[in-house]
Length: 302
Image (cartoon, rainbow, N blue to C red; front, side, top):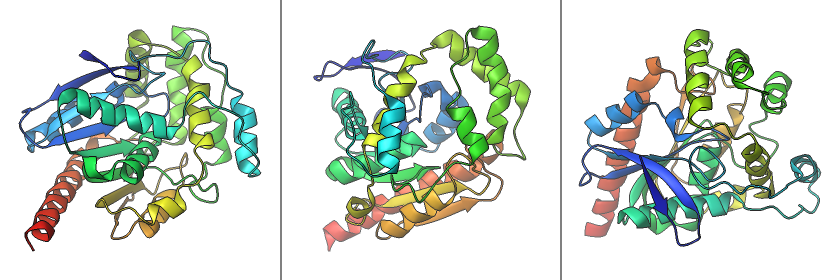
C-alpha cells in the first residue's frame, strides 16, 4: 500500500492490482468503509480481466487523512436536508471527495479511467461524472442513490443500525457485525465471515469520528437529479433487490435520470457484494467498460 499526497493537502492511502498499462479502473468505497471492503479477490478478478485496478481509503477513513476535531452536527444537517431548509456549513461535500479521486488519478498519471462506486462511493462517482466527465471512460454506480430523499430510503431497522453509537472496543465492534445482516444479501450472509471482516477492519483502523463528517457530506450535497440528466459518461447502475439500506428505488431512479444508463438488478443481492455474485458483477463491469470505450471510439471515428 502507498500514500498519495494531493495538492489539497489530503493524503490518500491506496493500492493497485494488475498491469499499470491496462485500462485503469478506480474503485470508490462507501460510508465509513475502508478500501479493504473491496475484497482483494474481487480486485484480482477485475485485474485478471484486463484492468489496472486501484482502490483507496476515502478521507476520514482507513489510513487516509482524517480531519480530527472538525466538529459537525450531523443530526442538524440531516434534519435540515429532510425539510429542505438551509444546510449548516460542513467540512467537505461529495464534490470534495470526487476531487480527491480525480487527484489520485493525477498522482498516478492516469488521464482517464473507468470508475466504480458502491453506496456513498456511488454518490461520489456520480459527482465525478457530473463534474469531471472528461476524466472518465465509464462510470458504474452500485447500490447507491441520487440525493433526492424520496428515493433509496432505508428501512427503519437498517437506519437504526447505521446510526447506532459506535462500538466502545474491539469486541463490541466485532459483535456489531451480526447486525449488518439486516441489509446484507439474505441468501449469502455469513455471520462468521462478517466477524472476521470486522476484526480485520478494526485492527487496520478504527475511526468512528469520521462517520459524522461523511454522513454530513452526503446530506449537505443535496439532490443530483437535474445534474444527472446532463451526464454524458456511459453509466451502468447495479442494485440488489434485497437492499434495505438503500432501497432499490435509488438505483432505478439513477438509471431513469442518466441518458442511456443501463440498469442491472440482482435478486439475491443486498447492500453488499457477496463473493457468490462476483463473477456476474465483474462480468458486467468489464462488458460495460469495453462497450463504453468502443462506442466512444466509434463516435470519434465518425
